[in-house]
Length: 342
Image 1 (cartoon, rainbow, N blue to C red):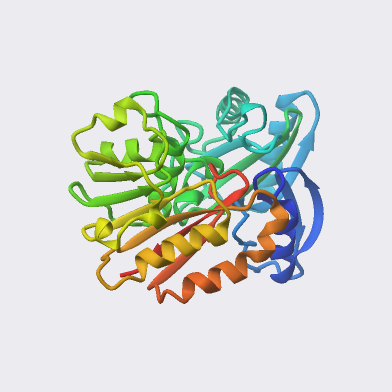
Image 2: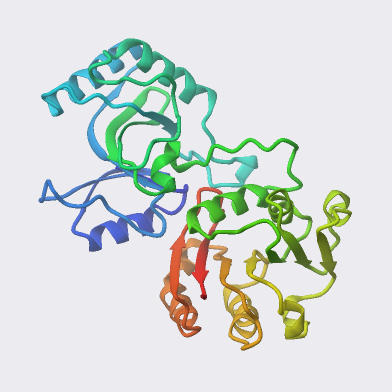
């Protein structure tokens, strides 16, 4: 079973089909698949948020009966005492991100269901002290997806990268103060996922910085930030001693502006081809030492994802060391590219 953003299902199915999987059942934000080879790798792809081995499901208003069936399915699947030490419970995305203010989150229902599961499963099967903790790398995780409040699917996966370790692929982050915008959360997720080693004192350029969500996170991390945007910044960001605002478009600036920059974040409300042209002219300049770029490509419509191969070919023409692409949990109809230049 695979979860994704509501609206991205067709791309999940396309990627899984290329990997030998067949469609079994789906709802917006949730897809189940079958494979003839029981040892096949779980499906993966740009738009797949989390894939798990599915071993059962249940439907009904009696949560105790659902938990009893879950326990029976796991005990049948794992004949020996193989205790899971992490339990992840989350709801599928029932709305597109941003519609009516919807954001993927670990809601009260997930907490309640997880608490019941913890209370009823034997420790020989589930030996965890809380719901939705961050899994240790390399460990198996018990997964429960609430497709509907009274329809659950359960299974497991082995935690590998950060999105595997986070419950439902959702980064648990609680800022000390209210962020200026949701770009704060997107930036946090992209930095963790990319593996970029941003250090205090590094200079980061934030293209499309207004009102300052991503810049705020970078400043909290101790970086110096150059925010580039024709629009105004939030005063709390603009007045920070490590922040400088350039009220212009990045493509209109001299390359010397970027001469000391080590990192670049780009999240502008323009079409991908225009974004790529701007970034290309900066990162390929011989006197610009940028090591890594976190670049958001705004699709606008999921049908535009058919252009991803062309856009990625263009990025590869910059001769990067590595390129990763993913629709982050906090991305709306867009994808993030982590481009390591050096």
